[in-house]
Length: 426
Image 1: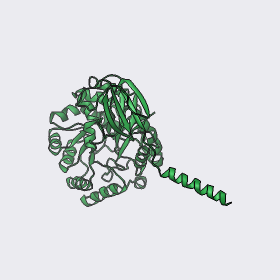
Image 2: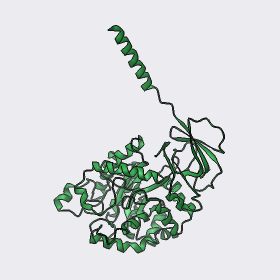
Image 3: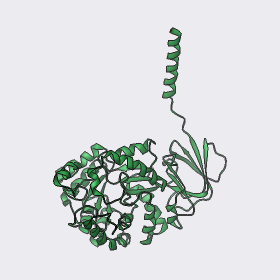
Image 4: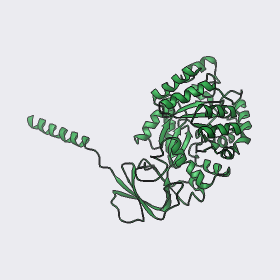
C-alpha cells in the first residue's frame, strides 16, 4: 500500500509540474510572395514573417533559412494585415422577422454568433466591433474567440445599445405588455439617467458604448429619423463614457441628429444617411468619424418587395436609397474621416468585403479604402499600436490574397488565408 501511495504522490507531483510549466510557444514562418505591411506602403518582394505566441517577431526579405517549428507556404500570395469591420452584429442574421425577439432566447444569439464569427474571419476580417447585441451574448462570444474556443475575429463589443424609450434600439412593434417584458434595461431619459446607463454598460463589460442617436430604418416606427436624445443627454453619455476610457458610437441617420451627436463629443457616426454641410462641418470640427455601412442598404434593398419587411420599413428603405450613393463623397468633401464598417447582420455575414468596392465607387482610391479597413479603423478603436499593420510586436492578424489590393481593392472579396492572433482559421 505504501509503495502505491509513493507512486501516486510521485505521479501527482509530476502532473503538477507539467501543468505548472508553460507550454513552449510555437514559432511559425510564413513564406509570402509579397507583403503589404501598411496601407501607406508598397508591396515588398518575397518575404518571411515570423510569428511566435500570437505576435509578429520579424519580417525579413526573401525566403532564407529561419528557425521555426513549422512553415506556411504563401509564396504565390500577397500577404497583408487582417481587415477591421467597425460595425457588425455577429449574434444575429438578416431578415424582417422582428417578432423573433419574443420567441428566441438570448442564448441562441451565441450559437448564431459562433457560426457568423467563423464566416467573418474567413472573409478576411480579423477584428470586428460588435455594434449592439443581447445583454451578454456578444461578451460570451468575445471570450470564446479570445480563448480560441470559437474560430473567429477579435471582438470589441458594445452589448445592448442605449436608446430612448420607444426609440430605435428599444423593443417596439409588440403589445405594450410584451414590449415591457422584453425591455433591455438600457433605455434612459434625462442626463443623469443616461450617464448611469453608461456606467451600467461599462460595469457589465462593454468595450464601447453604442447609442441610437436618431430613429432607424428597420425599426417598426414610421415617425422619422431625426434626433432622439436631447443635446444634454448626448453630452452626458459622451462625457461619462470618456471618463471611463470608453468611446461612443452613435447610430444616426438624420442630419440634425448627426450634428447634435458630433457637437456632444460622440466619437463615430454610424450610417450618417442624411449628412449635410452643417452636420459634416460639426463632425470635422470635433474629430467625429463616419462609418458609412453602405452594405446595409445594399442588403436590405435586396429584400424589397419580397415580404421580408413590414410596409412601414419598406417605405423607409426606399426613402434612404438615393442618399447612400453619395454619402462617402459628401463626407469627404468636408474633410470628414471615413472608416470601414458594414452593418453585417443586416445583410448576410461573410459579404463584408463587398463594402470595399462600394467605397471605391464613391471616389476613394484603392489605397484609401484599404487604409479605412486597417490603419484608420485601428485608430478608431484606439488599437493602432496593436493591429492594422504588419510589424514586429503587432498581433499576428494576417490575411493573404491573389493580386495587389493597392491596385484593385476588390481582390479582398476573395481571401485565401486567415490568421487571427497567431491562430490559422480553417
